[in-house]
Length: 252
Image (cartoon, helix red, strand yellow):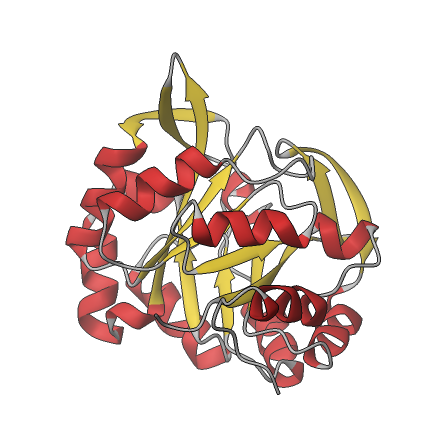
């Protein structure tokens, strides 16, 4: 079994880092550079930074800011928000991102996944999937969780993997920010559908939630935000908890 990764998620707006519940009610919690510096010291495996305004505002990623952030980030760095074409992926990678996360634009043009994977390698392409459970089915939503794409999780995950996604970041919209635990059924469905790593996201409230996402959900990595912003729990302790229970993790 590959080592399970513990990944903080940073949600970025013009005001700084924010966090809400159910993709709404955004509350400022920090600024980006200090948070990155703290996480560098807390044994995180990777960081994910999402610009949550870029797509809604119809603008490109903020390459200069990404360049500044990446200079201070000493772990693999995934960047998402506003990506619509291969040239933007190229510019983000040149600015210091190690991977990019695509969401809304991939539904509109699934070949963006295959084009990006073909040029830069699948390992650089993360497909972000935001889901709600509707009438017993996990449905995929775009535009920051506001627009039903018409795809089920199972169908879209299969397409994304077939197109060349290196991994999937699967987030429960309804669990987001609640700290009530991951939507295990959703994570399991994605993991059983594809052969690429699945990152569990949305709802982590304690280390046991992460353990369940891995053991019951089949996740290869666990992403979280609120647990680190609003409690005393840390990524380092999360890895120790998982390691003590037999989950392979990277411990320094």
